[in-house]
Amino acid sequence: MTNASRSLLAVFAHPDDESFGTGGTLSRYAAEGHPIALVCATRGEVGEISDPSLATPQTLGRVREGELRAAARALGIQEVILLDYRDSGMDGTPENQDPRAFINAPEGEVVEHLTRIIRDLRPEIVLTFEPGGGYGHPDHIAISRYTTAAFHAASDPQRFPEAGPAFQPSRLFY
Image (cartoon, rainbow, N blue to C red):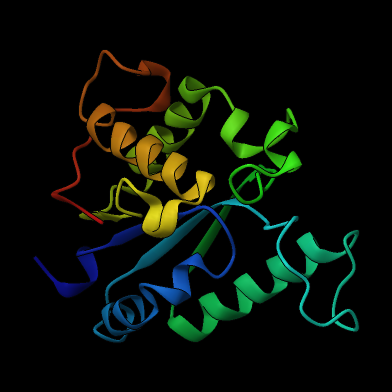
């Protein structure tokens, strides 16, 4: 097995999740020649705006997507896949009730989408948040749960047969 065949799929909820906990690992893995793809469930549309000269509530998703793509380039990530769900906001906020929010997406739909990505990309390693989402953010908890379910579903030819041939990554890391 060559280094280039040891690919990694990182699966997170928002732009910046790839950088604040795992950026160093992703960068090192890429520097060693391993292909990396990143799945991001949302564009972080309801995140905090610390400097109003950089974004408005209407432009925040677009701004954060641009930041995500720039961070991916800096880290050496070859592919960014956006799932196009809406940021759910922090636990207990009104954004949690938005029907478009990631935490309100049908679990089967998200797991099937992630299973399809795993089967298509065939990564050796899948990386996501630990089950508590790092600090309890509802989108982090959801992406951990859905990614873990897709990791296991990907190897079962009876689960989502239309998502491509079964494939089992070697490792799931939190």
